[in-house]
Image (cartoon, rainbow, N blue to C red):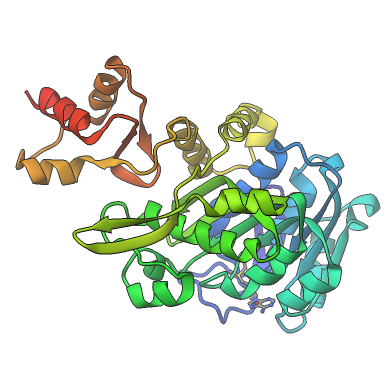
Length: 363
Ligand SMILES: C[S@@+](CC[C@H](N)C(=O)[O-])C[C@H]1O[C@@H](n2cnc3c(N)ncnc32)[C@H](O)[C@@H]1O
């Protein structure tokens, strides 16, 4: 049943269902609140202003309404809101009225009802594009990487984590040109496969795409890239794609570089200290940013899994996680929890040192 739903500082007409399906009259998934909060946080923390923004797969358009309402006025020049759903324009205009925007805000919205690729290519160039599809983003990557501006931000969501995280390795190979891992590192590995795929499509258009904020959560992964145009920068990106060989089997290739811009994450955390700003951001998002603010300082990819180590050492239990982190730090290493796994510890210590600390803590 259609009702008025509030999210952040915006209201929409939509349905709140126990089980969210693609054939809903308009698609609204409350679980993706964190995904939309992340858009608000990243765009508030970057320096870019006067942005021409694209929301090509808008669903209810709640992300666009929130951008208009929650981003500083000087950030937004225009927001192009699009969905191919039947009568999307008519539906979204009701949402605009519901939010009672002043005319100067309303004028910033452009509503369209095209296939997302046509929408992107006909509007030519954007400072921010948010690709938020059902399943894989592949269908939209070519148009998105063509139309993202130099120094613009491209955000890509994927919900086909079963392929990226190794439940369906053949599908991963076909869709992402990579072999996934199926173990405790699968979420980070899958995210890095996705980063590389987006970068490969960007490379075709001389666009170098560097992750500035990435995460894997619930049933999806999301990456924000900053785009720089130029062949040399693209070559630098491609040089960071690597494969792993484990017991004679190849895994990847993956992006081996950084997943976060540490300064940007620090600014996102700082923004959350502002009560007025933070009231629109869900607690889950705040927790995610806080943990990423710690792990992003450690530049080594991947993490150690405490449960896996306990199994290997047949200890039956694990040391206290916080004490383990303190022990690593006391030896001069960086160490932190990781958002990728509740049983993981990220550190720049090597495997031998990590195992030594584990044993010392178990005594
Ligand atoms: C996951 S939902 C988007 C959710 C929305 N971004 C949000 O934050 O709530 C995907 C949307 O893409 C739309 N869609 C799917 N394929 C499309 C295409 N080729 N062109 C335009 N819209 C499309 C669907 O109608 C659906 O509303």
